[in-house]
Length: 443
Image (cartoon, rainbow, N blue to C red; front, side, top):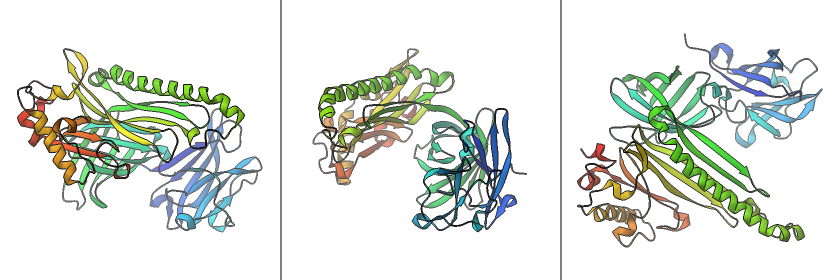
């Protein structure tokens, strides 16, 4: 028998400082075509007590239940979607009567306006038990010997990301949901579902089954987390903010890299915060005289660093750092930066581009020539003129090859966006160092 699936959210409905619980039950045993059953619990100092239930609540989707800003008899009103989609959605106001909320939203009056408040039960708040909001990187095993790596982003139970087979390194898209201790993922090729992952939370990771879309193939599947994220945010003057989010590896192998990764990201974060503070301090007197002196956009300075793990092993990691910065004007800008380390002489050492290639081989021509041809073929407005210029870009690596990342304006206009050029190992192998960090892929 499959475990019961549900969505859950906690929020203070009566302003007493204690959170109430809203639990939306899923599956045919808890509802039908009209919607699902939702249980409500009142928060107390010792836990939760039964408050009531609600029927005909739509299955989890964007905008099903809203905890509004209005109150009735001291309790927040709930707005429950009863019909429509998108901008045409209609909601019923579920108001507390002093003892409980109404049972059935479909027999209540429809609200004239869109509800103003916090939407909950969007796509799986109850999954916080299994995956905290953020990003997690996993390594895993399909069947008996096929090794995988997977990166997932998860928020309120909604999950998206990619995975790849270590033998090939080609990313495959994933999307799905988690609820309580289960995770359901769909493997996607464009809009087509090619396979499904059904996973259950275990003591040390996730275990379950990979099944092809036609049901003809299925294999046991296991994943273990190897990295989560750390984040810091500072709200600056006016509407400015500075944020950094970086990976923190789990286990003895990964922990060797944590200190150098954190140091790099936190140094960037500190410098950005100091720059924000210094800039606005200089302009404080001017703004005091004229609050509109800087302009609305200038006051929304933003610095955001984030990271995506591209490859993990106990002795080698590759992380693609990403920065977005806005300092006023029509738009912000962004770029990628490399965070690549390998275990050398027992210590985490930064991987530089020259570490990858044999000094006796003309690797600059091999790699740079490939990049230039690729950018020209894709229509970049101003591709590098020389092979040396072509390799002067941020790079990451995975079993698929070495990928070079070009920010807007680097090889094309802002409208063209960024360019990413993957140089496969079929091109790289003749020029790789036999004793370098990528030696495992020389064969």
